[in-house]
Length: 89
Image 1 (cartoon, rainbow, N blue to C red):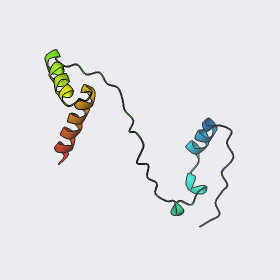
Image 2 (cartoon, helix red, strand yellow):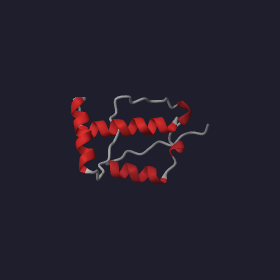
Image 3 (cartoon, rainbow, N blue to C red):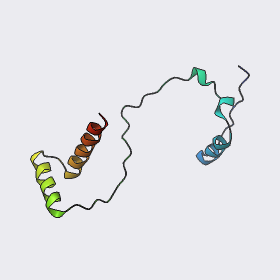
């Protein structure tokens, strides 16, 4: 492999981002020596949405969540995740 270039020193994250947007990292790093990384404790990013539900349905969900001693939003997320997972099988 040819000699790698030395990456410059950056004075800010903005400057570094601008540099890597226009430069090929393979000219600066030997990716064949890269190791896989695992970050098991990272919290998945979430996005807030607005969802309109009939009041009766929401009341029923809240009652079910209360029976399970969990927030109703968490119960909705769990149900949605289970349904999506089941749909993929």
